Length: 102
Image 1 (cartoon, rainbow, N blue to C red):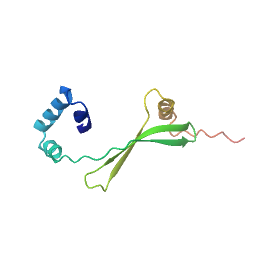
Image 2: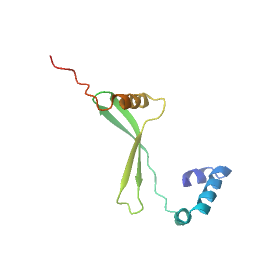
Image 3: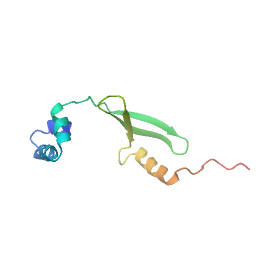
Image 4: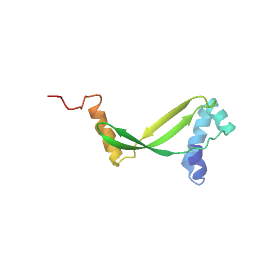
């Protein structure tokens, strides 16, 4: 949110959202005022899934304020082959797709 607000200084919507959140939450106001901003580095990761093949996923890492926990999020961009493969994986799930032995 801070990146959007600073990147679009003439857009009233991010500033309005920040003002609304600050008014509604003392915790948000305090965190916003502390201005702790981490450098966000996005990366693309490649995974080979045995049933659906190569997935190219965007990777974001969220770190808590103590820097002792991380949440790693992998997503596929809509419209990409990897996105379609992830949709297929939702259907395939945990099914055993190995060929049956004769």
